[in-house]
Length: 76
Figure 1 (cartoon, one colour):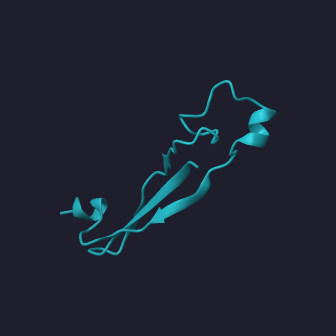
Figure 2 (tube, one colour; figure 1 turned 45 degrees about the vertical axis):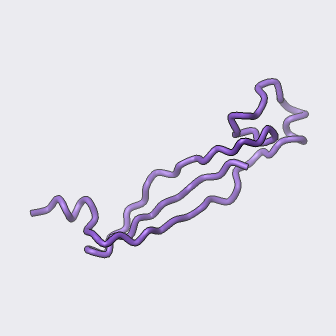
């Protein structure tokens, strides 16, 4: 099933966090309506009962980066 990936970078050098845009991760399942493998001929009502109609719970990452954030590192 397809899902969203959420990344929040935490910069240890200044303590700021920066949220990156959510990224959709595509699966290879034919029965997921968001997948590139999902058939274009699969339409409601059959698709609504046979295929996944929602994304999986988003994966969340919070990497700890040993630098200042881009905004703080661009200051003199």
